[in-house]
Length: 132
Image 1 (cartoon, rainbow, N blue to C red):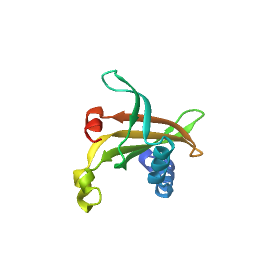
Image 2 (cartoon, rainbow, N blue to C red; image 1 turned 30 degrees about the vertical axis):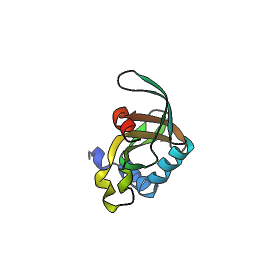
Image 3 (cartoon, rainbow, N blue to C red; image 1 turned 90 degrees about the horizontal axis):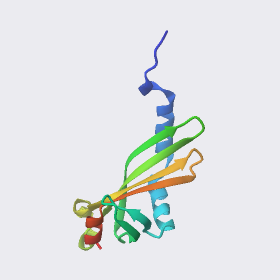
Image 4 (cartoon, helix red, strand yellow; image 1 turned 90 degrees about the vertical axis):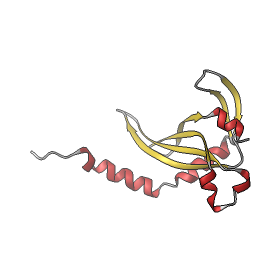
């Protein structure tokens, strides 16, 4: 009997192909535009509630991880983005990435038809308020 290692399974090849053909930057930009760069009803790590958080205009995103999930009846893809803001004085500078300040993370979950399912925000309120 031949054993197939999970790392060699076809699902990983299929997932890699999907990611190569997926425009993650477009998905996160569309999501941010849809929510008008606002996060509503956010609880921070200290259990403090924020009615609305307005994200800075110099926000940039970077895909840092992707994963798939499968249950008996559902399949989904999760894309995790780093949220950063650059110093306003260097926003046009090519070295602005070096001056970027991490303000949080955003995870977007889509179903197998690439329809939006859920979002998860993890924001650093202190750095966010100092960058505005």
